Length: 131
Image 1 (cartoon, rainbow, N blue to C red):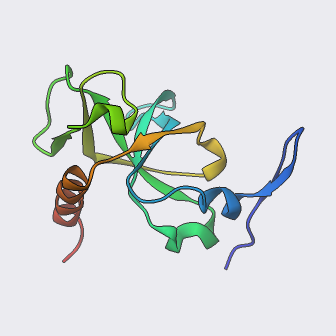
Image 2 (image 1 turned 90 degrees about the horizontal axis):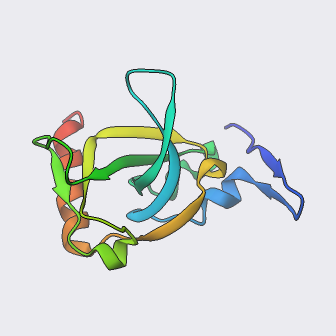
């Protein structure tokens, strides 16, 4: 098992595993999300889709959240409760776009996905996994 990195800031020293423990599945967070087609990132909301079993590895899996105004993908799932999610505009979870990030890259927690939408995300993710 890999030893967690230690992050030193002006206020404290925190291990990445301690940061990972602060985020639960279906939390909505703000992260620099990587583009799939180029070496760049865009600050955007993302949905935590991993559980705490990844904590020892110092990573979190997140799915892209994008504007509902963008061209839809068949796997997109609309976010119904924008207030609970902490999102400012109609949005969809783009389940096919997943990133593996270090918890230290998470800027903040924006909100939490409602249970009905969380179940829909889980079903879509299962459809992409090996059976």
